[in-house]
View 1: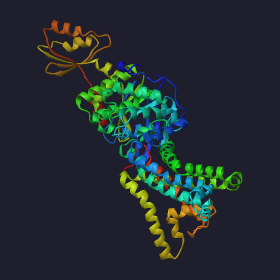
View 2 (view 1 turned 135 degrees about the vertical axis):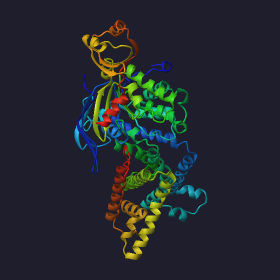
View 3 (view 1 turned 120 degrees about the vertical axis):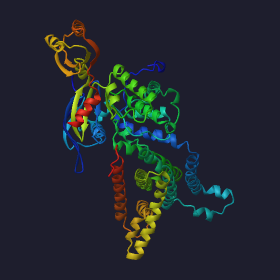
Length: 288
Length: 304
């Protein structure tokens, strides 16, 4: 129908498959997010450390380059690629994703709630689960690009430089990078979405994403001191995550909490966040 | 005609409070009005039909689809314009309507084309690249209408479509509803507490009060029936005027001071009244069809 006619006619074309519709939300969200210069610059800054790691891995596997620059060989021998390198990589990138989430996460659900957009989404053949999956995929895509994707690239580069024997012996590191960082992304995304759903003011929600970690660490330390226990550390999500990563990267953890307790803690946090989202993401608001 | 909306003992309960109680009706009109005072349960009924609110008892079908079991299929057939301010921040109208079209299942290119079409259709063509946040209330209402029709629904549910509109914008909205009814091949449910809006646009009316159906009426039939009721005012000697009318098959009652109320038979010619009056040298000062307005129907329903 031509625009100039300005009459109404029903749509008679084809429809997209229902399973793919949750991907519409990240497409529109990214279009909006990349309009922020700050986000673009910060996103680029997230790749400095991976680039540094790649340079390190290259030098560690090409000590002759150091010699050609007149750097003594003993210094070159310090450069070793061990599982801890990948653990530190996760640690640093996780810090970047933490800030990235605090910036991006609050703008995902709270504007829809503030502007009463929920009925518009949910009156279509589009469920609450798809809505949450769509919003979550924004963070999952974004955080994956700065965490496990460069992590696996780093692993592949190391493997290609160190040879097949090294790759075969250390293939578990690739699995640890993927699993460890995906768990982190999952926890962070759910936490950000839950806070975004409950706190309508974006700045406050962003602050609370940061605050949950700092406040948790503070309460955990206080609890450990008062109760003379180590389980207060379970309130410190950073330490909990580090415990899980240490196990995955076969490094000794000094957090003092069992890895099973850490996994359980993460599962509980995810469950609470999902419950909070289920309570809030509705077509209508229950007013008591 | 197959019913569009069929309610079979539908009840909704929030906590200990009955919001909708045992609603039973089959609606098949092209445009259906949902009327009732504030808090009657109109919006809850709409939200229940859309599957937002769980039923506590009974069932409901739209186009034969059970609202509990076939919610997804049902929502593909329905367009909904909510009552309250509803939009997505930081989007232009065309992006907003396109996105809503895509969520309804339209491919991106088709959704973009439809978004332009419906925005022109509702009268936002020139403002379609403006951010929704900068729209006036009337423009937001039109944008909400555009998103509701972008995917070509078979049933359009409008919740208070003229809320907050100035008179020209209200007339425009009414005109659009009438036009869609006639040309779009869709069924429309208009939920409003403004009787005039419903009277102008609807064929069938369902009146709710305290979560119960207090009246159902087919306005078309009511209008036809009203044509048979006549009120007459005369001046002069009546001279068995009422008896003459009764002899012609009218049910005629004198109301005193030259006034009569009559129910005309189906094949009655109005000129017979003038003839009888002329024969008796009786002046006819006023001849009115009874106009039982929706307001009368509504008030009676509320009294009952």
